[in-house]
Image 1 (spheres, helix red, strand yellow):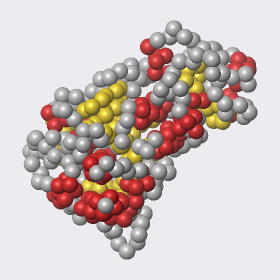
Image 2 (tube, helix red, strand yellow):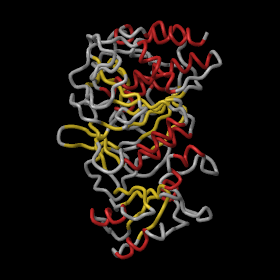
Image 3 (cartoon, helix red, strand yellow):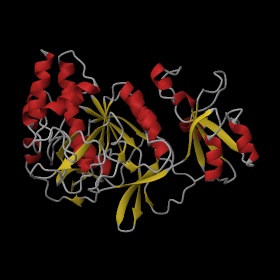
Image 4 (cartoon, helix red, strand yellow):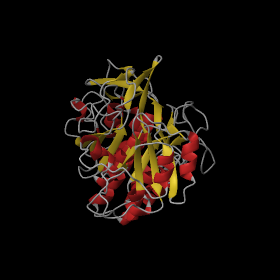
Length: 431
């Protein structure tokens, strides 16, 4: 792919300078900006580089909000190097030392392992997963509300799946891999659009756990809530496995889009390791939290203390997977500060091409928790009240079932989510 640099300045460019945002620029190049900053430009020119400049993000409204400015989203730019030019480590280091630059990094291509599902021909596995965490009691209080939305940032969603009909409120596809060697990829890899079709089924599986209709599987955790289907990963074959592949700096605008569309919860059943520079997604996750959007993320599936992001970022609800006995699953990573566990072994849900599959992973545990949070938010809203992310985490922390005598367990966090106790505590606090 043509190399891009992401450059965060200490100050935004002049207010009168019309700089298009990257998503708009892909389709409309009527405005081309060829300078970035009076101190950075000479470094790039000395290296013999030609380039275009866009904004990394677009403002939610006509003017940048205080929350956007606080996280520096208004002063984060994308430098598109032309003529197949490459910025080596030495040049990036030189830019990093410029006094007007807060941070700079190259575009990052990342892979996230997609757990291998088993296609299900039998779609009756009982309701044991919900019974283990007291879901029946919680759903007797509320089955969710259509105005409570969960954004699923993933490999997309099967838009025609019967389990998800009437459940998808908005949709967007942020995958654009033009310029890469995409011969190993499955399906659509180009253009921002509103067709987040899921070729592999991972995102469809996640969405079904949250809000599935329950036609040939367990009903979703929050069946009356709505989904924002956001495709951020294309699917690539890597040997005998499938991986989700994408660009961190395409995922970031997708997170912001979900926040700006009014998502109450963002579920990210994905994670990437930190490879250098700033922490992945850090600025835009802080923006989401500042807008009172609860971000729920999988902790990872390698069973080690490796840290995967965004789950390892402060303020994110990091979710580990429990096995059938309610103990941490062997594959569940614990480098992140785990908040809670949820069922993550042999979970039946919707899948690609209108199918069904059984899959295991923290990818399945994360939407279980996202759905539970959606029920809590719905119950509070039914009483004319709101919940902050801090409220939500406090409820989960004080009601989850500990796996031993420790208040917080390295692999289990505060324990296995208990929705009966969570709903009781919320009801009590609302009175």
